[in-house]
Length: 259
Ligand code: C2E
Ligand code: MG
Ligand code: MG
Ligand code: MG
Image (cartoon, rainbow, N blue to C red; front, side):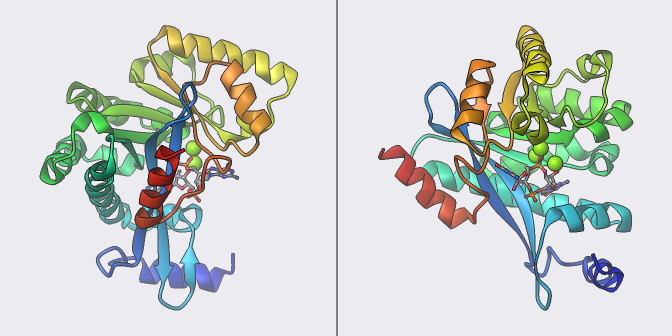
């Protein structure tokens, strides 16, 4: 990306969520066995007044580097908890996943804040999942472990995102006591015979330890079939649906229930 654009974005980032420019989109997650939509992952989008839609792969690293990630993280948590309650009005409650950066977890108050936000909106803590990437988790193992402990005790699901992209040891992963493993889309999409053997071992190990396994980036029926055979519990990807605004998600889930 153009350096001038990036520096413009960095300048404009503070206050962007307060100005209403950062919006949560929601991507459906299905239970593989039943096919039902059982969850939604909140994914941030920045609608810049002049530059248009900016993706989180661009502005989240900027926010982490420039001190805006806590502001954005708080906003996303708030939006997701509110959405979790409203989306349940039409039917069964669904799980809501929120991505966090290690910087947010280094503030020892994150777990309390997350629980307070859920309570404020009337969201059951058991509906909430907090995701952190494998690479950020292992680089911040103490802070992440402490936050995970508090969240888990309160009933929140703690999840390792982009698993397989980073390089964590089994020891480190076990120390975190995560409840969920999200298999990175690169593994889902390039599931060749040899990596499939490895993936099968990882998934069965995760199940032994009581973790739920989610396949990310499922784009084709063949990939869904492969992840089903491998024993994944849930799937998320363009095949089921892209991240969409809250209103569109409500329509999506209503339509899925009448199938
Ligand atoms: P993630 O948490 O692993 O989210 C999944 C990403 O993969 C999303 O990209 C999603 O749109 C995309 N995706 C989902 N299904 C498919 C598929 O079938 N094919 C392909 N090619 N892509 C798929 P997105 O929304 O651009 O987000 C990118 C990353 O930015 C996220 O990866 C997450 O790490 C980070 N992120 C997004 N929102 C937030 C946030 O509010 N806070 C933090 N800390 N990070 C965020
Ligand atoms: Mg995620
Ligand atoms: Mg991921
Ligand atoms: Mg990611």
